[in-house]
Length: 111
Image (cartoon, rainbow, N blue to C red; front, side):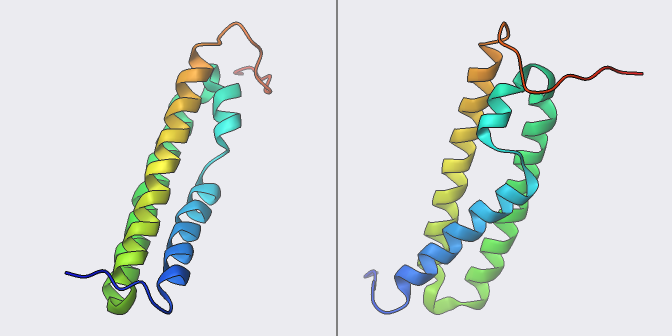
């Protein structure tokens, strides 16, 4: 199967990658905030990262199903962004948990 990279391929790739990043941004804080506040919020932050990944996957699959002409760049762009997001958030969590002696940006108490 030859890969046709003409016309709208690049646009579809960028749109798919962009929507993956936008959905993650909507559902999550940033990797920086994850790292800074890992001591108190790593579990809940990662829960929302993975919810965002599922939501992203659904949008990418739907787009690929309805746009057969641009299926390859939609899948490649979306999956690439999902992998990058997962790596960034997992690194942020690990880096933050390794720095438990440094203060986060939040102060709160349970009542």
